[in-house]
Length: 231
Image 1 (cartoon, rainbow, N blue to C red):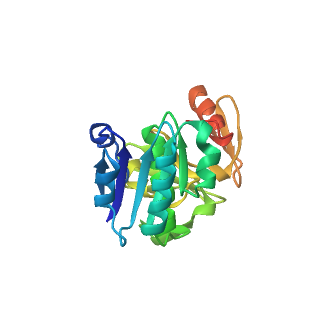
Image 2: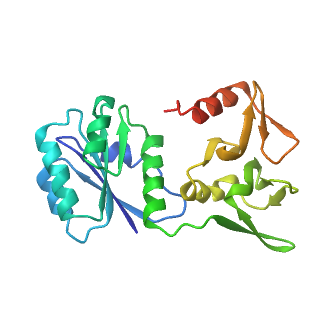
């Protein structure tokens, strides 16, 4: 079971964080600390966890404490959550990841997914049961998944789409195994690496001659994500 720890001095983040569903598949526990002493009591030498360390002003005490965690609890990966002005400091502190304010639920989930890919033996493909047997789909060949009621259509490079009797949310595990596979809409999960172009209301994928019609708002969202401008 994964351990996620949230620390912010003199503020309990429990009410906000508990509203976020970090994983559809993996079991996890949430822990909260409002003081460095409480956090120290939660951390042991053998602890394996991701620590979300919130600090609006990265002072000397914070820097020393983060270094102490590195030294005493090497299996605890620190995700520093702070002002964008401290991005370079985060790099110098050698933290696992840095999230700039404002920290959203989506940013926290992305950091957790990045953590999973480090600690887990993640495959580069997934398997689907069909009427013709088990089909193995490499992530590199996946274009997108589209919701269709209680069914999901899976689109693959140079192959006919597969219609699976599962709802789209049952494929959210893919987003945890590959950072380029993301759910960008209630009806779509996209493999961003296989998007060739995004027009005003359509997407063209590598390995496909057919385009996908989408809304203009989704097109804007995808462009921002591909350009690294999304929050």
